[in-house]
Length: 143
Length: 116
Image (cartoon, rainbow over all chains, first blue to last red; front, top):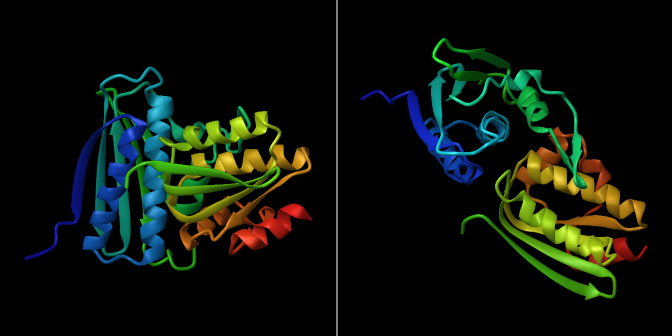
């Protein structure tokens, strides 16, 4: 029986969901026996993207959701995140740290750009933010 | 375990050891930030952070370290990282900041760094 390549999860759009999201991603990547480095980097990119949605897409909080899809193809991993928060294009974020208290914030999109090979954003006609991130598997070893 | 557990001990006068266990992400980084703010209010700027039980760190957590290092160094202090895992090292590397932290393997080495 072929292994299912598409996996989906819907989570509350709160930072408390990130641990469950990482667990889901690890479980999916384990099914497909991806190498450790791809595994760690894809989990990190997904976590960073979801954290950005929580912070920027739903600044008022509330009972909102994030839908996550992971599609594992022989040559790539494709991750899609959908939310119905305010229009938010993470690719438009300033690349570089900003200060909030003494902490530095804003490194998430920088990490995603370093890790993933393709990143795309669109706002659907139904009012969804759709972020797609692709990691080519062959390049993962050297990237 | 779930979330982040933080243990703080003053190992010598003015030198504080912090042990992090669990996940330092966008959900938990403020807990760590609050601990550091409390130490800075007490004028404690020589810190060692034991990372061997830290299973995950994201950019929100790394940003706390980067900002705190600046505050410590501005006050003639430093932050020594004890035993970061390969996963934690990788994130600091991706951010290009791994080299700015003293990396040590145990409390004694951290004391040497922080006393110098």
